[in-house]
Length: 189
Image (cartoon, rainbow, N blue to C red; front, side, top):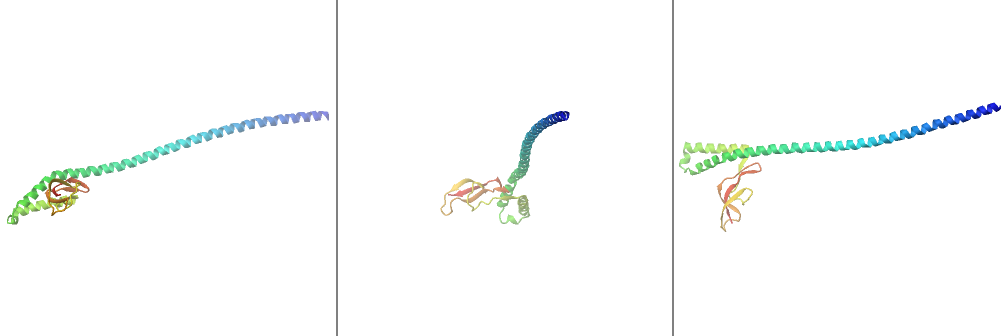
């Protein structure tokens, strides 16, 4: 029985050693796993931060592209408005000459075919301008507006209200909201 007891004691000690051996690697495994989890968490946090940075850059590029589209659309519209303005400006002296020609005819001469032809051409040009969106600026009898009128003369007349346009020397024209040529006027003070 003593043998058995020695054998049991050895067996018990061996079992204890085996269990301790098993426990140590388990602790090592746990600490190794914990380190890996921590490393993975740090890696994940870094990737999330990187993703947020990339997303921010994407949103900025998207906003810049949207602004670019709006800016180029405005530039295209401005180019068109400027082109129409330049074309109309080149044609305005012709309109002015037709106005002068029409105003020089006497009542008798207005019955001639020549006058009717000049008047038809003049009216046709005004209709074409109107279709393009070019309109004459109202001046005579209106209140002086420096954004529409160019005052080249002033008169003192108490019968007329202050800042009233009393005479128009040259018609002004607008295209949409843009003044192509200011009206040249005389203003009462």
